[in-house]
Image (cartoon, rainbow, N blue to C red; front, side):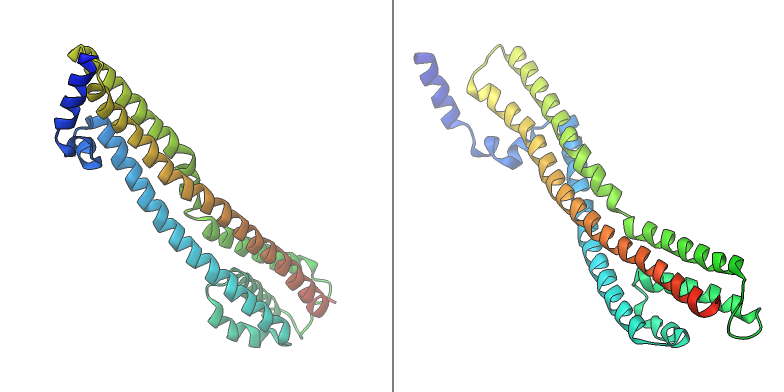
Length: 240
């Protein structure tokens, strides 16, 4: 009882910074500090990716909706092509431009407005559409793998920092031959900070990764549907 009382008095007289966040981080081992720096960097980069992808996907979706409205309201492909300059951030618009450019090349080599029986040329248009669609999907999905990596790796990196910190804390306990609260608390608290920061980095990453995946699926489905519709229009009007 007397020993416990002495320990409490000693703990009460300890400087306040010893158990503050800054104090704990200052006394952390180099390995734990490295883990914390890595996790903070991953979190900052994740938030940059989150903001960038959110704005990019919102703009891509909005311009695609506007382009589709203009496309179906117009009757002339050349007029649509000229107006498509206003929808540079629309993946669907880029697919249309690729298909129209290929169609124009074929028309320039044919006599008249229709190309009877040249189904191989139709396949060229289809390949141009698919190639443009693949390129736009690559752009859409860029940077999102980093969110998936952060979501899966950050908790384990934080756990590694926690395990290492606890191991160092037990080594200190053995060296001091004392297991008082004053001896154990700083090392355990320092170790748990790594896990907490790992979760702080991972949770937003996994939430927004799933959100972005769903948004990209919608855009990619619209791209696929538009490619099929455009191909049907070309086949009906130019390959009859």
